[in-house]
Image 1: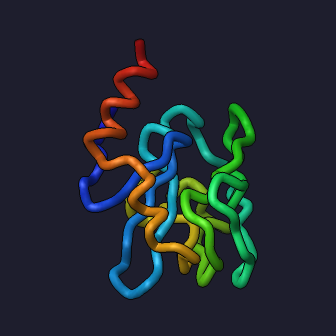
Image 2 (image 1 turned 60 degrees about the horizontal axis):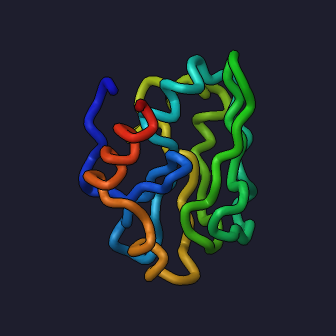
Image 3 (image 1 turned 30 degrees about the vertical axis):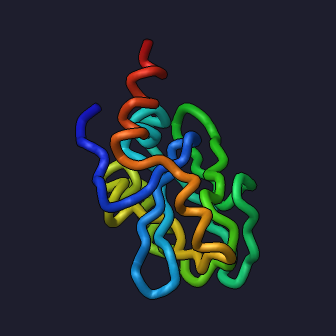
Length: 132
């Protein structure tokens, strides 16, 4: 693992991260581990702004030279914004998965769903299990 997972966000078992913005919305992306497993990302299919997403259902699609993978919604809600920079620069996900490579901003229907996600320490433990 090249970078430690930031402790200011929550994680899903499907390798998505969620960062609470503090204003009723969350930023969603894939983890550094996920982008490493995918290798070179060549395309990101973003959700439509205004789309209602269901926790655990596909939110976006990330295509790499190796495979095509769904990005699952870690919380249910409405897509408020998407990272349109990924349309021309999908490699931002590889370069900065926890920053410039974010995928969408979602307004959760139930902010309590964040509590069902993993902390950074719990996610690190999950990664250790997966490697063995």
